[in-house]
Each structure stands twice: as structure tokens, then as C-alpha cells.
Image (tube, rainbow, N blue to C red; front, top):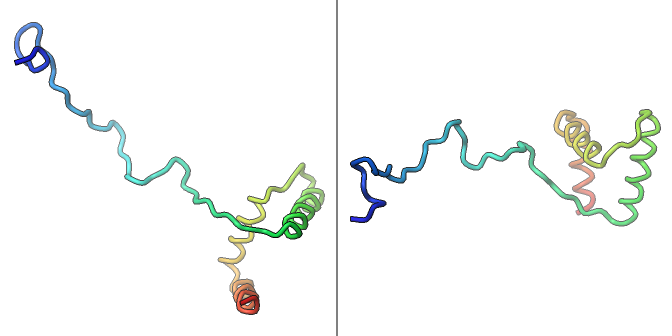
Length: 96
């Protein structure tokens, strides 16, 4: 028996056992509860959105309005406004 296996006497070693977590956790949980989405824009759409963001920042009296703010707000509006939802659905149908 090696000294690493000894569990008795003055030089006894404690068996290697994984410690139980001190705080509960869920598998698959991340630090940030948000999920990232990406969108592909044409160069013209990208430029137009940048211009809109700068103009919105001026109207709001802030240094800048981020694309994240714009898209998150648009999604909130889409999910909470039945008329907007129907309008977007029609627009998607027309594009296909």
C-alpha cells in the first residue's frame, strides 16, 4: 500500500474526495441570462441605421443610442404590440 492510500496513524492522509458545492447551481446556467442574436444588414441598411441612431441620440439628448438598444426595443415592441406584429408578418410575407 502506498503512503497516499494510508488513512490511519499520525501521517494519515485524507482520501481525495470531490467537495460538495457550497452554493447551488444549475447545469447550463450562464452568468449572463441573455441570449445573443445577430442580424445581417446590407451596407446601405447599416449606414441608415447608424444615421438613425445618431439622430435618435440627438433627439434624446444623449451621447449615443446603441444598436443593441434599438434592436432590443424593437423586439419588445414586436412582442407586445399585436398591430405591429401583424404588420411585420405581412412585410415578411411580401418579401418571400
